[in-house]
Length: 102
Image 1 (cartoon, rainbow, N blue to C red):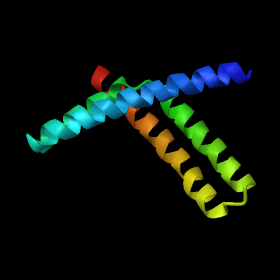
Image 2 (image 1 turned 60 degrees about the horizontal axis):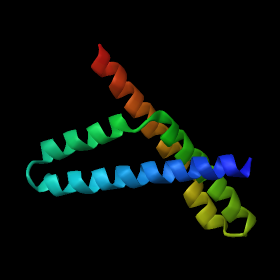
Image 3 (image 1 turned 90 degrees about the horizontal axis):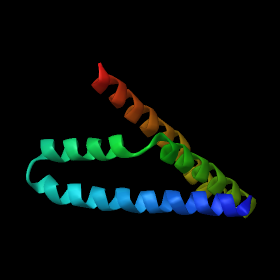
Image 4 (image 1 turned 90 degrees about the vertical axis):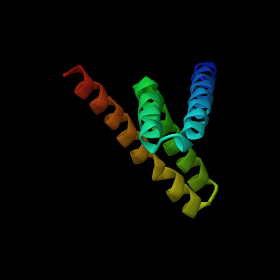
Protein backbone atom coordinates (compact mmCIF):
# COMPACT_ATOMS: atom_id res chain seq x y z
CA UNK A 1 0.00 0.00 0.00
CA UNK A 2 2.82 2.39 0.90
CA UNK A 3 4.56 1.72 -2.41
CA UNK A 4 1.39 2.56 -4.32
CA UNK A 5 1.00 5.80 -2.37
CA UNK A 6 4.68 6.62 -2.91
CA UNK A 7 4.34 6.01 -6.67
CA UNK A 8 1.19 8.14 -6.84
CA UNK A 9 2.84 10.89 -4.84
CA UNK A 10 5.89 10.76 -7.09
CA UNK A 11 3.72 10.92 -10.22
CA UNK A 12 1.80 13.92 -8.86
CA UNK A 13 5.06 15.62 -7.90
CA UNK A 14 6.43 15.11 -11.42
CA UNK A 15 3.22 16.48 -12.94
CA UNK A 16 3.30 19.45 -10.57
CA UNK A 17 6.92 20.13 -11.60
CA UNK A 18 5.93 20.09 -15.26
CA UNK A 19 3.00 22.41 -14.56
CA UNK A 20 5.27 24.77 -12.61
CA UNK A 21 7.67 24.89 -15.56
CA UNK A 22 4.78 25.71 -17.90
CA UNK A 23 3.59 28.46 -15.54
CA UNK A 24 7.09 29.95 -15.49
CA UNK A 25 7.18 29.94 -19.28
CA UNK A 26 3.77 31.60 -19.49
CA UNK A 27 4.89 34.21 -16.94
CA UNK A 28 7.77 35.14 -19.24
CA UNK A 29 5.29 35.72 -22.04
CA UNK A 30 3.11 37.84 -19.73
CA UNK A 31 5.18 40.88 -20.54
CA UNK A 32 4.14 40.50 -24.18
CA UNK A 33 0.40 40.66 -23.64
CA UNK A 34 -1.78 40.12 -20.58
CA UNK A 35 -4.46 38.58 -22.79
CA UNK A 36 -1.95 36.11 -24.21
CA UNK A 37 -0.72 35.24 -20.70
CA UNK A 38 -4.26 34.50 -19.51
CA UNK A 39 -4.82 32.28 -22.52
CA UNK A 40 -1.58 30.40 -21.85
CA UNK A 41 -2.52 29.89 -18.20
CA UNK A 42 -5.92 28.51 -19.14
CA UNK A 43 -4.29 26.14 -21.62
CA UNK A 44 -2.03 24.82 -18.85
CA UNK A 45 -5.01 24.18 -16.58
CA UNK A 46 -6.91 22.47 -19.39
CA UNK A 47 -4.03 20.03 -19.89
CA UNK A 48 -3.89 19.18 -16.18
CA UNK A 49 -5.93 16.02 -15.53
CA UNK A 50 -8.65 16.07 -12.87
CA UNK A 51 -6.93 13.46 -10.66
CA UNK A 52 -4.09 15.95 -10.10
CA UNK A 53 -6.53 18.39 -8.50
CA UNK A 54 -8.14 15.62 -6.46
CA UNK A 55 -4.70 14.43 -5.37
CA UNK A 56 -3.69 17.94 -4.39
CA UNK A 57 -6.87 18.31 -2.33
CA UNK A 58 -6.28 14.94 -0.65
CA UNK A 59 -2.64 15.86 0.06
CA UNK A 60 -3.81 19.13 1.58
CA UNK A 61 -6.21 17.30 3.88
CA UNK A 62 -3.58 14.74 4.90
CA UNK A 63 -1.02 17.49 5.45
CA UNK A 64 -3.52 19.37 7.57
CA UNK A 65 -4.20 16.29 9.68
CA UNK A 66 -0.48 15.72 10.20
CA UNK A 67 0.04 19.33 11.26
CA UNK A 68 -2.97 19.12 13.58
CA UNK A 69 -1.62 15.91 15.15
CA UNK A 70 1.68 17.67 15.79
CA UNK A 71 -0.17 20.46 17.59
CA UNK A 72 0.32 23.16 14.94
CA UNK A 73 -3.36 24.12 14.70
CA UNK A 74 -2.98 27.44 12.91
CA UNK A 75 -0.91 25.98 10.05
CA UNK A 76 -3.19 22.93 9.96
CA UNK A 77 -6.16 25.21 9.37
CA UNK A 78 -4.25 27.16 6.71
CA UNK A 79 -3.21 24.03 4.79
CA UNK A 80 -6.65 22.46 5.21
CA UNK A 81 -8.23 25.44 3.48
CA UNK A 82 -6.27 24.67 0.32
CA UNK A 83 -8.44 21.63 -0.43
CA UNK A 84 -11.55 23.57 -1.53
CA UNK A 85 -9.37 25.75 -3.74
CA UNK A 86 -7.91 22.74 -5.53
CA UNK A 87 -11.36 21.22 -5.94
CA UNK A 88 -12.74 24.50 -7.30
CA UNK A 89 -9.89 24.66 -9.81
CA UNK A 90 -10.68 21.12 -10.90
CA UNK A 91 -14.35 22.01 -11.42
CA UNK A 92 -13.35 25.16 -13.31
CA UNK A 93 -11.18 23.11 -15.66
CA UNK A 94 -14.00 20.62 -16.23
CA UNK A 95 -16.42 23.45 -16.99
CA UNK A 96 -13.96 24.94 -19.46
CA UNK A 97 -13.73 21.60 -21.23
CA UNK A 98 -17.51 21.27 -21.44
CA UNK A 99 -17.89 24.84 -22.71
CA UNK A 100 -15.30 24.25 -25.44
CA UNK A 101 -17.06 21.09 -26.63
CA UNK A 102 -20.36 22.94 -27.13
